[in-house]
Length: 179
Image 1 (tube, one colour):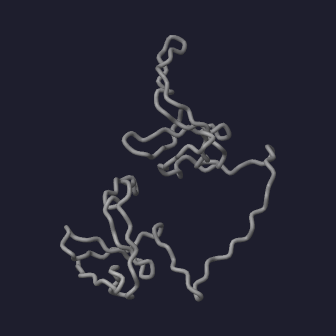
Image 2 (cartoon, one colour; image 1 turned 30 degrees about the horizontal axis):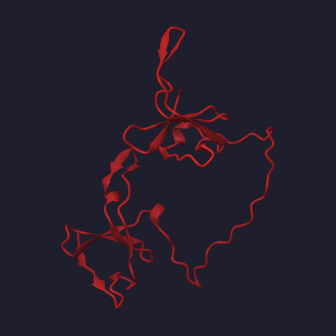
Image 3 (tube, one colour; image 1 turned 30 degrees about the vertical axis):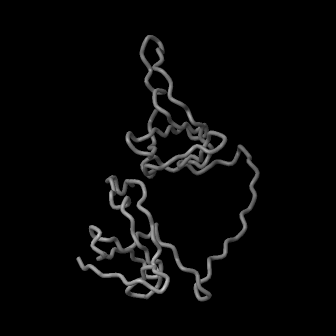
């Protein structure tokens, strides 16, 4: 583990010791689940160098910083004339024809996902892409003389692939459920 003392530029911003570029400050975020494990490092603030693909985290308020490689999903490429943004072909508008079969992802390939309701109370299904309905929690119901606990917790239901996504306790993540 090597620690570095970062320098300030004329604008009182920290600069990268490798490329002398200005570092971007990123606040600590929410706890993430990575490979089935809780990642507490995501909650700590950091200074990111997008050019070098690294970030710096201060050690206990000492003024010294430890350097880490930036995960691929967090990398932002700095656009220059030599590195222009990729061109995107316009999307073809396909009418909503019910005879077109959608590709349904197998349930083992769906990681825990954060699902948020949009204004209409629905969200896209991670499995097939259709619009899922949000089902609010309700009281326990008696079905055929047996208590039914399936609707006692908020969840999403997809009408196309019949998938149910239930919230993982204590997190903002939803996971596919059999029923």
